[in-house]
Length: 141
Image (tube, rainbow, N blue to C red; front, side, top):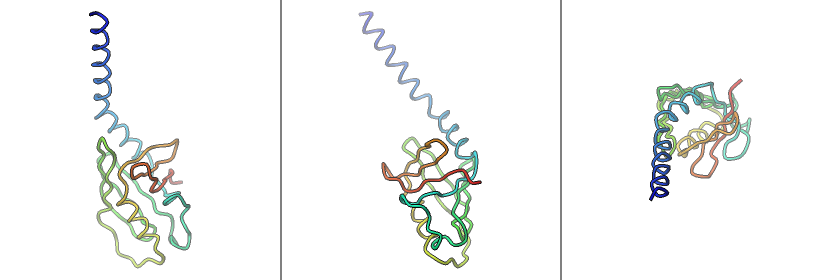
């Protein structure tokens, strides 16, 4: 009887520990996201093609309140992001409308729509759709 009570107590404590991380982990993740601007280093597993991104490499900047700004390479954007237990949703929102050479901007924006989850790997922010890597971002210098 004591053995079962002990096992039950351990199971309850583990569940409480796992569930208590919700708000704390979300705040910690937002703090990590907002720690610096993130510059794209890969898109669908390849380095950005300078011919497609002629005016610079796209970057994103997250704040702790769920706002996201950045550059598509050619245009500026201002939108939002939302964290959930299952991942992240990115909404580019408003985008300036300068004419851009190459198809880099459209590739970048399409990739943002595909993002469902993410992970940190060292100093890298990896945006994913399930197990598939959509893009990797590194701290912008």
